[in-house]
Image (cartoon, rainbow, N blue to C red; front, side, top):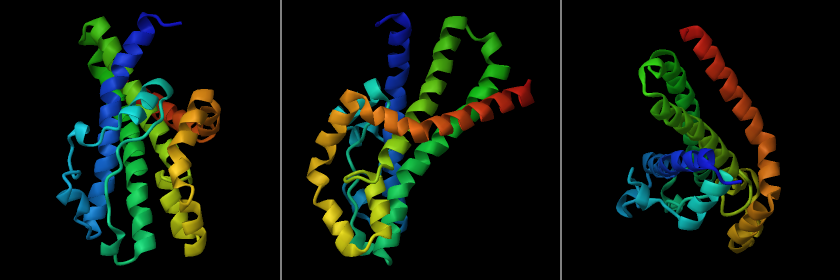
Length: 218
């Protein structure tokens, strides 16, 4: 049932989603740039502007299901010294950035809870805390989702670094079916149940870290 608490949660999720996709795509572009590929920079995608990376359908999926996708940053593996290895590095950069952001949010939330929460107006403080929780949950879910080894997600590029070239090219034949299949799985709830097998342990680690830091700072 939709209620005031749900509204607050969704309002808190909106800026979090914009931050998550921006960090994710910027990390891809930055990693590729550092590996010698200027494509993202020349296409205007080496940017911290959320609108440069926003995919409307992917963002809606993130609002309602906590996992989705952004507009992919263009890369050109021809610039890499080792195409398979460097493509995998660039692909991992986005999910790693999201997980890093999630755990940084836990550190900041612990500091906020111990030192600032008591002096902040209670309704505002509740919203701020919700934003931090959403920051962790959305970024972890986004990272895990993008690591699925199914094209066109990042995980398929990582898998491609491990597979023989002919097997990887065979996998890419299914790329055009990727997003329609993922949307169907999202709507039916099947995808969420599969992702929770990986995401839930990461959530638990985040919770343990948060509780440990709160106890340390208190």
